[in-house]
Image (cartoon, rainbow, N blue to C red; front, side):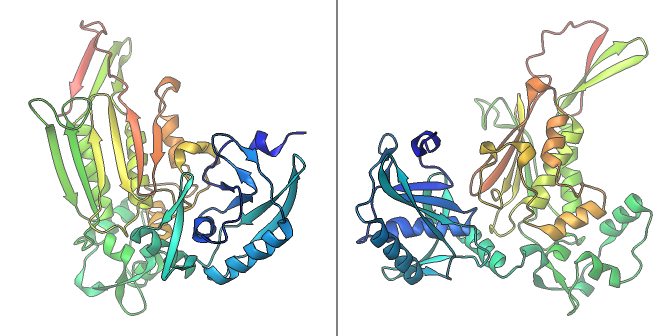
Length: 400
């Protein structure tokens, strides 16, 4: 039978080891209780050491340790978090497994030492939650999302020409009744805009509604003689940000082509559908709680990177997951709904898979996330193909 040491190789995002119960320094392990409850949950193993390799140290009095663990959690974690304590005997030694589920009453704070701190999990560490993430936890605990919150902006002071025209074009239906704006979630009963209402207005007042686009000279930011070939900054409503960013990518990339008997085959640097999906994902899933933030679109010789503020909603890291198993958890459900109703994205949350499907197997896009950002890297399909025959059958259209 497999032992615990065969399954648990090292501390990770969802489990942590303690060789003993540190009674004199409860913060050392209670901060992880807070972090697990604020995130995806996890397990702590008392009586297990991970110094260099997993070692079963065991507990002298597991019953007493269990009682003290429960007492510490009740006294120092707020609000109350439901946990499960399970005694285990491994290698003839007694240990305790403390299972902390993901909580719904976030944020969960550690209270003690004259402070009140909410923690989150980053890799195998429990760290204080940065302000934007703490604000998201507060909204989660009150069962709200930032995009649905009421703003100070009055509906009568804003127009929605582009929004209405896009809806008419995509659905053949017109928005001709103010009540339609309520159904979209753009408006509150007080005739004021929600955050998403402000985000789709022609005169978008949301400072964070920005995309910075740069075409760099080479394989990294900056160059010996010319830092950037082209750059632009867009500050506008969500629909314009999508169209303007797409135009920038198209104007700063090329399309190779090859003649065939029936015409020609086009070979773009980047599949337009993949770029579209990546930009939509960035716009609808980004965190708008990070003040002064924006989406970055960076084009290099060999790749295109799209960086959006805010990591995975559940705190996991996309690079550690199977893309096909990633749950569709939406940070901004109202924004997602509107993009879907405008037929700019699908409801099923299949954006990452659609991006991958646009590429051949040897050019798979890369996805990476941290607690503060989400990065999509699309490879240039024509990079290092300069050795292609340069004759009348092969050409290139530069779209600068």
